[in-house]
Length: 319
Image 1: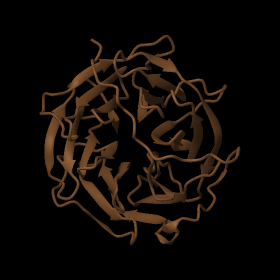
Image 2: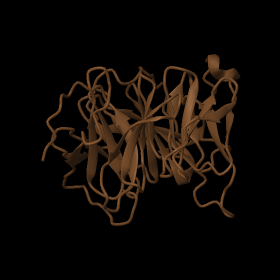
Image 3: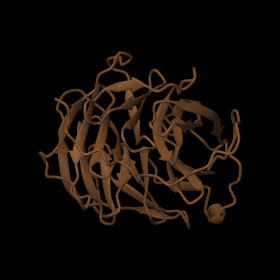
Image 4: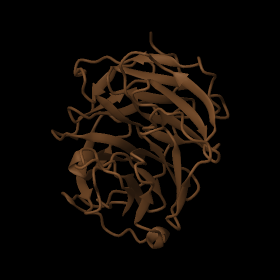
């Protein structure tokens, strides 16, 4: 059934300016106040990071795919610690933080999600979206709901939020089925992954990792239409970050971040270029603080199995 929601999704991102067209390149210095912050943030051994969240304070939060614990790193000093309350023993994948310093955590293969206190790590409320085979991969917050992707199905799980942003109780979520002529879900593959709002706030953007296609999703009906990228695609697309009318799309296995100038309604976009770093080692998701983008290195496929992990800061690309 369609989800009947308010559509006031505006005010979600600060304005950014794209100044020049560029191809694949290294990120150039942005010249802001954070250029003295550490470029590499060490994470605990065996942490298995994937998601990142940064709010209005200079702290980055990283979930663990191993047990769902949350690590908080100080962006000024590079130091950090795991939050006092350990994870539930199931994965923490995509993360977002709200103004109340609550973390919304996608639960990966556990088919669930949870809301966590960003200071203590205490689980405030948990949601079991499904017991079927699933991968609850990423989450975006809007003024009235949190939307979670399931990479194994054409579904968004929708968690309504109160006027103050507070989440509903454990059973208070909805299932939004996605449909569209260009939408094909490949069994066992990572399909829908990262998710973000459109610049005008009226719809959502979701990347399909296995095809490189970017979709615009109507949050009322679930209608998913292909975004016109002028013949470009975003293979290995993972985390998405919207900043004004600029969409940053992490291409994990390619060790790149695509910079896409979106139309206000999100129906079309222009890939202005891609940036990389010699410090990237399969980055997955992206968050912004001041004039820097921060990305955790998931190190998928590292041989022997990776035990050490970092997050990397790059200047905001000016493409």
